[in-house]
Image 1 (tube, one colour):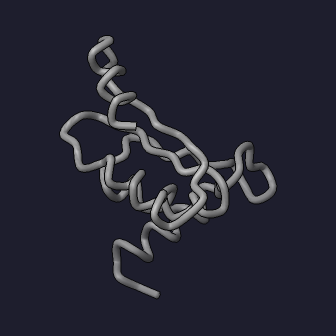
Image 2 (cartoon, rainbow, N blue to C red; image 1 turned 30 degrees about the horizontal axis):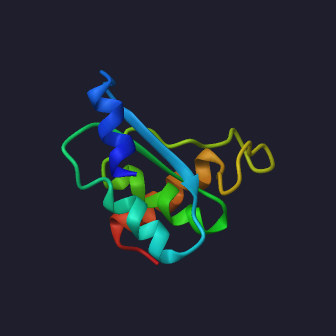
Length: 97
């Protein structure tokens, strides 16, 4: 994934996007670890195991979070409604359960 990011920027991109299916917590952690980079990135975790990436990535610097317009209107596996993602991000950033 790091090589793909490097290729994007070496090819002139302003922002690089990595979106892939997450099968485990270790894979989620690896995706989130990509955000330890000075460059502009969009990181998206797909599937049920990718939900944590969708919640944490914007808090760690991912430039965009993909959400649905409402429950039942999801267009990708692991996607959440905007209200749900916003609520979960607030819970995490405020330290609430």
